[in-house]
Image (cartoon, rainbow, N blue to C red; front, side, top):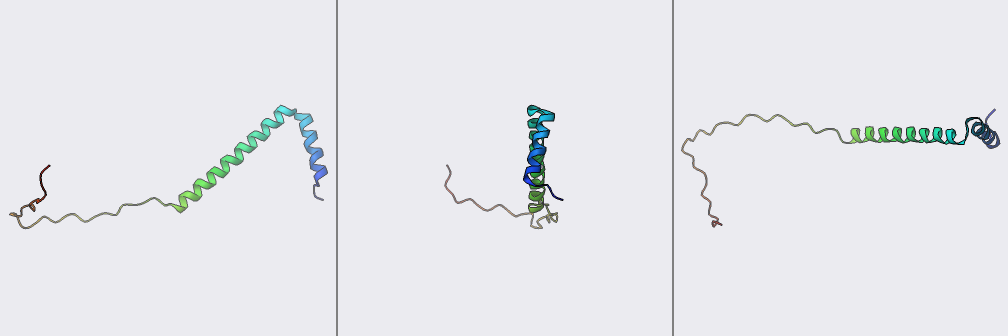
Length: 80
């Protein structure tokens, strides 16, 4: 036995009468906020899976230059 549209409408009217209009709308607002937060959490989880954090790879240490007399290249650009 399922609930048809008239049954749901009757239950909604009874709930509004018992709880009052303001309290019922506040409850529905809280439910809407909960659904919104749930969707936001799910999208953040999907985004985290789609964009994993980038990990830096360790680089080997630089070898010292064996030529001690090595000079830097001359700069042929005009001075400013």
